[in-house]
Amino acid sequence: GQYIMGLQKIQQEAENDNVQSMVKLGRIYLSGIGVDKNEKEAYKWFDKASNLNNAEAKTYLAYMYLNGIVVKEDEKRALDFYFRASDLGDGIASYTLGQIYKKGLCGQGRNPNKAQEFFEKGAKQGNPGAKYEIIIPKAKEAFTLMDKPDAASLTKGNEMLNQIEPTLVEAANVGILP
Image 1 (cartoon, rainbow, N blue to C red):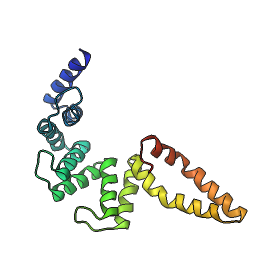
Image 2: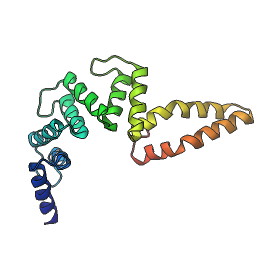
Image 3: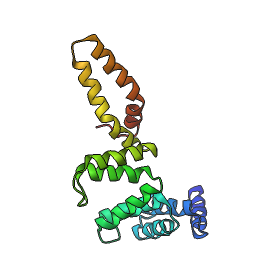
Image 4: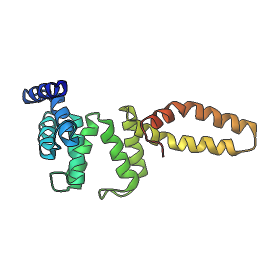
């Protein structure tokens, strides 16, 4: 009852050019939550929202192009959408670009410096995965210090861990920690 009424409201708002409702509707159709999964319909709504310069919609389109969902797999178009979404402030897009450069995917080759740039950008945009990626070296350094036999190193290692603990907790809460 209420879900169907809510869905109808979202549909009506999307048809009236409400960009947030377009993205919601795209997510609903892509996931099939409460409706039959319809990737073509999802693409349609993400495309409309993307044309209105919505960052999240561009990230979803990038995902669809990267994985060949409804459209022909196209890494170049996927990257283009990820770059535009990142520039518009989407932390998921920035994090994904960081992973692409970290792992050398989509024909980009490994580039740790570029990966770090995108992780830092994603962290500033609030993405927990990006935040986690930029603290990994700090965590490794802290544990290395704590393995040393002197008290000063142990103290410094503990201080470093205390500084990064909130990010580690956030990463664990969203299922990012390995």
